[in-house]
Amino acid sequence: MLTTFMSTFISITMPMIIMMLASMMSNKMNKEREKSSPFECGFDPKSSARIPFSLQFFLIAMIFLIFDVEIILILPIIIITKTSNMFIWLASAMYFIIVLLSGLYYEWHQGALKWAE
Image (tube, rainbow, N blue to C red):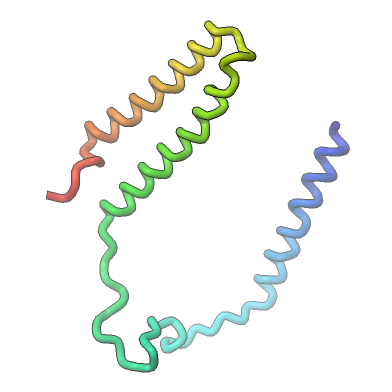
């Protein structure tokens, strides 16, 4: 068991370390202004591409990701209904749902779900 874990761990981490070291050693990043500017088919840009990004969009995206992961975590609870003790299944499902609803209530109470006024 331990040897399987170690061989899997080494086979995953070693290529990652090698790629990170190769990336740091090559350092071929070109820091010219023209290379980092937005491309508009050879024409001068009409406006700045560095417009400020609304924090509200970022917040909604984060809330979406949290509740998307929630669905992924709820699916195994639904699948094990027939193989598990009903009381344990119900208790774990209720605990999970209460934690998620308390998070939703907190987000709502903090005003994260209100759009900019």
